[in-house]
Image: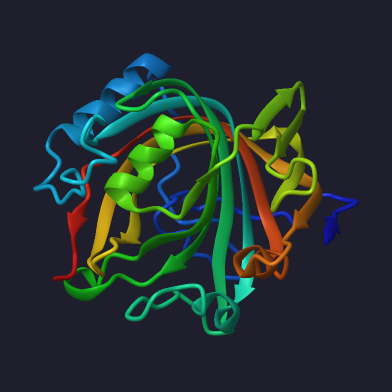
Length: 288
């Protein structure tokens, strides 16, 4: 299925830009504090490290042999040419992708915000450098963290097996290995390919709006569920500078994958390309 956008996306007013909420109404862009970043990339990464230094108590699957020899979180990374596209979905379409007890965050019109994010790390701590694409949807906070909305990852591909083991072993994210995934930027053009030779995935082409810069920082909540049913959360402090982008084309090869079939139903309303510094904290349980 191909979505093509011949002109620019509807002009929207920046209020906040935060991966943990993406609280949107029909007239405003994501909610996160927008601030000009005066620090260098190195200082930005140092700030991320500082924010993660006090990570709370840990729940791991580290006893399992698959993770016994892996470095435990926090994982810290810096990337250039990260690409992100946000979509509106019908609440019923994405609710079925979530486990029992987890509820999508929908607006008065029954719409839910979800997105795909893709990047290649330039530097990383705790894991090898990797390229990743993942599809997430916004959810309400769970159990005792009812006020803390966040994101739930429902699909992903990673090109590095060591990084894959870290993300699946400690967070149980639903990622699979794909050595051929790629993210590229050439001038004002950006391209992500996570669908090689007819495999399940997608191809996304963006055109960067050089006259639409942004800068932001925030703290994201990323939820997932361990094999024993416990729901865990990772806090992700992040810094980003970049530009809005126009979606030139978006092709999804869903095959028999119900998650990617749902992605095909989304309506893109925002895209951006950025340089980021961020960290995945040690996961903590939010359910018993």
